[in-house]
Image (cartoon, rainbow, N blue to C red; front, side, top):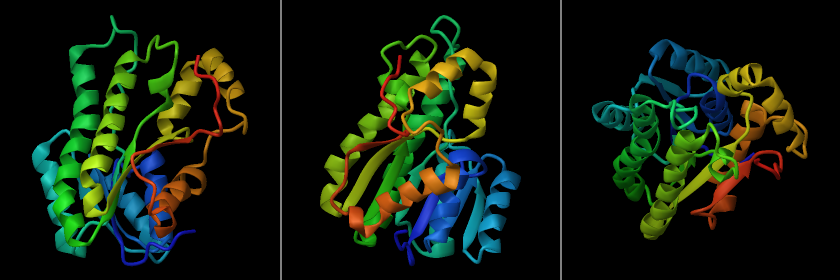
Length: 253
């Protein structure tokens, strides 16, 4: 595993699922971790798990749809740990459903929690990363964005594809500051995916058949450790890319 000792990482949506897995893996690699989420009690559980392993963690309540909360998250991180080296934009409200069924409110919640929050945090951490001589930003996207059959996924894919565009722009515009920006698109054992499998059993069976490795990624061991590796010095020349952490999935129909 890459050594992230001395690095400070901020992870949104870290109270469960992928965000929690990434936070645990980051801490295991030596990073000081700030775990953020709407419900303080949930991110405190993640922070306590990190501390129990001997790591350093700070839990902060943050509604990523609120610009003031995002600013307070970055300010609180800098106050506690001095700076920001790694940002993981993971939090996302998911507007699933056919276009005629998705409400304006659900679509806007997906946009505000996804691309808009990522956009805001990328700008907020930029000066701190510049002061540190560089940094890494990881944005979370989804393979839903490249399905041929978008039935039921159009609104969700739209907000996730917007995040990928922000990654490409950030990589181009921040590269001179030695800030790398990457997207990962994971299949992981998250509560959201488990809910989807339970509620869409036939589609889930077809979905699993498209994964050559035959399984969904483990939160910490597969997804978290991959993100740690992407943030490590061995990946210093990689930026602007979307990394599919999906077990080699070949068919999105």
